[in-house]
Image 1 (cartoon, rainbow, N blue to C red):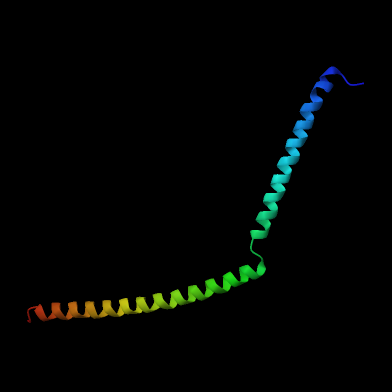
Image 2 (tube, rainbow, N blue to C red; image 1 turned 120 degrees about the horizontal axis):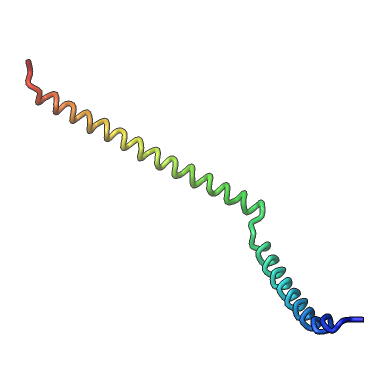
Length: 91
């Protein structure tokens, strides 16, 4: 036989069960939705190939700029050295 305290808690327990069922349903729906939006192996492989191509292209572009900067610096410093040597008094 149930005690009066247990009888009083039966509707509260049912409400808790309903709330838990509802929350579980909402979470399952969210997880199902999220799992379909995650990338698969093919998507990741495609992204990896695109990133490799982009990195290679940018690397080549930066290498050209670095070479041009180095050549410009050599020419600039060479001109400064020649100018300084021309202005030195000859002994």
